[in-house]
Length: 203
Image (cartoon, rainbow, N blue to C red; front, side, top):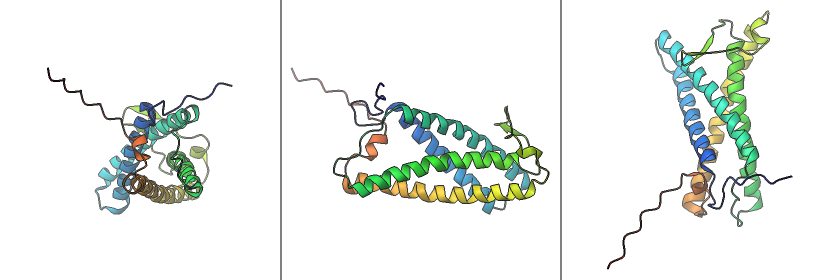
């Protein structure tokens, strides 16, 4: 069986596709967290809250598709190796955190999709006001949707808080590698800088 391509190639970095997906998804998740906090805690006019919910759904579905692509890419391409001097317990923690991040990134959009599918209001989802998006099967046809909707809302709410905490832990670990350990781990996920043009040799 042929070996998987290396995400890092010979540069010690993730490849451009993996890097782009990572930062696009990260920016999208932070945007959704901010929108969720605004919808839950700010006293906004009802119509503005409604628009935020619709945009929240659109971005969430888009990220769900991007996350599926990212996981597929990750399964087909090896990640750069961790530093050889990294203690085994830290390696296990890193792998565990990455697994938790991937799992939560799948759970959150799926729970949100299920939540709007089970909503007693039965509001259609139209991505960015342009593309109709279907509800999940079965949930819209439930006889008593209110308790299911409430359970899914709780799952989505607490899942978002857990994801926020894991992201903070992940970011703190990346900054520790960069500023304290200086082992190049963070640079693996940063876009490569263009090499400055060499100055011409004096005559």
